[in-house]
Length: 156
Image 1 (cartoon, rainbow, N blue to C red):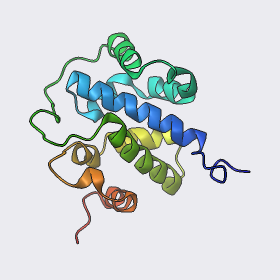
Image 2 (cartoon, one colour; image 1 turned 90 degrees about the vertical axis):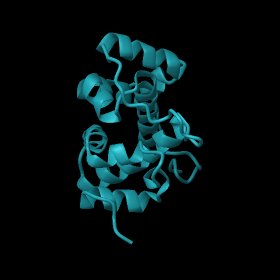
Image 3 (cartoon, helix red, strand yellow; image 1 turned 120 degrees about the vertical axis):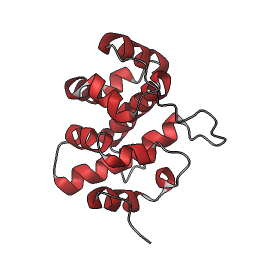
C-alpha cells in the first residue's frame, strides 16, 4: 500500500512542509522577505533540514527557528506582512501553499526538491504569496503553478 493509499502524505511532502514552515516562521520573526530568509540560510543548510526534517520537527518550531536565526546570523529586516492585516493566514497555512507549489515545480521540471524550493522562494511569486492584501496565497495550486511558469499571474 502506498502512502497516498493509506491516507498519508508522502514523506518528502511532509518534510517540505516542515522546511517551508520554518522559513515562514523565520520570515515573520525577523521581518524578512522569504527570499532573504532562503538566501541567508543557504541551500546547503536548507537541504540538511529537508533531509533531517523528521528529526528536527520533534523540536518546537520556535526553537528550530531561533537556532537557525542565531547560527546563520539572519538579520532583522523591514518587511512586516502581518502588521495591520485583519486576516493573517497562519505560518502553516502559508507553508502548505509553498509546499504544494514546490512539489509541482519539482515534478514539472524534474529538478531536485531543494532546487525547486530555492527557485520558488527566490522568484517573483514569493512576494505575491506573502502579500496578504491580494488573493495569490489562496489561489488554487494549479493556478499558482501555471502562474509561476508564466512568470506573472495568469489573466482571467
